[in-house]
Amino acid sequence: MRNLLFALVLLALGLPNAAYAQQQPTMQEYAVPAGTHPHDVAPATDGGIWYTGQSKGVLGWLDPSSGEVREISLGPGSAPHGVIVGPDGAAWVTDGGQNAIVRVEPSTSEVRVFPLPLSRSANLNTAAFDRNGILWFTGQSGFYGRVDPMTGDVQVYNAPRGSGPYGITGTPDGRVFYASLAGSHIAEINLETGEAVPIDSPTARQGARRVWTDSHGQIWVSEWNVGQVGRYDPRTGEWREWQLPGSRPQTYAVYVDELDKVWLTDFGANAIVRFDPDIETFESFPLAQANASVRQLLGRPGETWGAESSADRLVVIRR
Image (tube, rainbow, N blue to C red):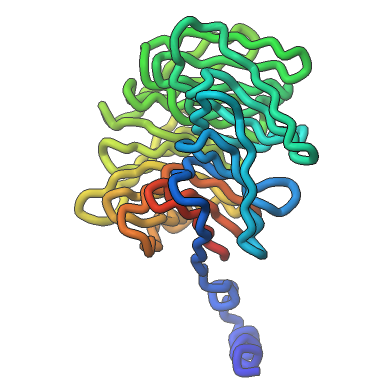
């Protein structure tokens, strides 16, 4: 009643109450089996959360309402890195151990493996879908490539500047950009020819680690080496960069939510950080586990999820 009366007073005075009405974010952790070392997460279509168990060669599924966990073995030698949910509702995994893309059917747990046509490991990292339903992936050894889910065809390309391809994202209009950690640049992939064109930021050797798109198609970049977050606008070619707070920030993950707020992980502060581009301010959410190592973020409306790879936990910030 007190909150309602206060809101009514604000309304009567003509004052904005959106900030007051907004709930304070809350953080919750969920344990996964010891030794799993979860790397990436992706909200599943059934309300659960997929996660890659890199050390156990499994794809895990967590029920946030009960904490129940089940695991699906991905195959001999598996060491999964990234996971996303495709347009078909399935979980798609970049599996460095098998040097393959792996599809997991949610209803049956059926595993389908798409091996890369390479004689050496690509060191697979992450994946994203384009506007044609083609999955694109990165490999830190100096590769990127594509899988056609309809035909099973897999193609691999040499990255234009060698080793480093890491994070990757598809924009609302279906374009695809990846980040090169070792190469300190981002690149756009021509979906017709497969050619990748590097795009340099204003900061040299910044260590572009992961990328994400906002609703306008702008590309947000976590700049690991310099503790910054960058934004590239493909329409204008303009770059902006912001330094994270703290004495020695290390920006690892980046994710943009449904409100176009930018979420980051800072290894230097052992925290998840929210950046509001409208007012250019940061808000930090310290993690309860020391050296939690949240390497990736993803989410759904009202929730931002990550995996604490060093603590065998998943973490969510609800807002």
